Image (cartoon, rainbow, N blue to C red; front, side):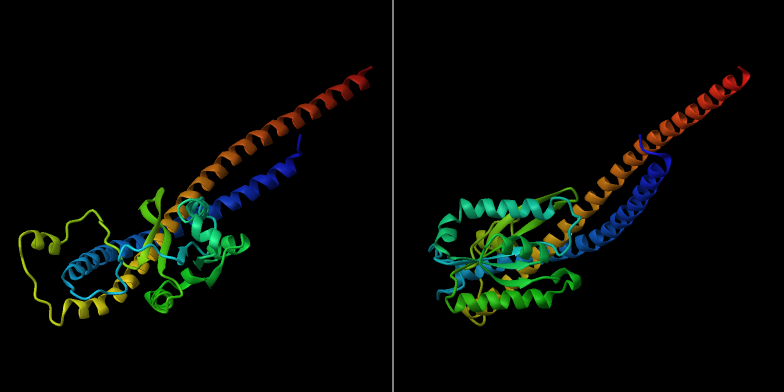
Length: 298
């Protein structure tokens, strides 16, 4: 059995760890609140921008290269949004496992032919996929240290440039979509060329179209599309980054809460062990005293 000093040291060490995890939980909770506010403010704009784009695509007489024609891409780029820091449970592990499973099934032909490249946002994504030999063409470690729209727009600007230069004819994004504090949806969705996506809402434009409302675009719908599609893909990437950030904070808060509760249980067990060791030590000392007194009396 461990001596009393060792047990006391372990109890002190676990208590110190418990204070750290409790503080990290509080910090994550505060950041989660801000992240939720940002994503809730961004979602309606992103979704309705998509509905406007859909309406313009229906009205445009000229084809737009950034809009999907139904043709299967030959070479694709996947933007993976991970995190910069750990201690967030299975946030990164589950996402990366899902992505690799998709690469080996849905995107197997691109992986086998070398026509799949990655852009990694966050240190964890970069470390994971670089170590496993994937073709990582861009790395953005420390991205979440100062989360802002401008760096996100620069990443999308580069992806758009590569798409327009025919380096890639498909751009996808993989991320954790925020659902609740304890759960996330792991998603891989296409950014370029732009496809019609149903977000489960009925936009004003769609309702007006069903009622026979006709729109006059000035300038033409095709000209407006040229301006709105780059804005749309920027906003969709920004939304994905915010979703991932909120999911990360929620996962970290839950992980630190579990760690705090586990530390409490470990302290309880160590205190029990300490009391048992202390009682055993006292019993041993009493036995020695009684044995010594009996020896003296004889």
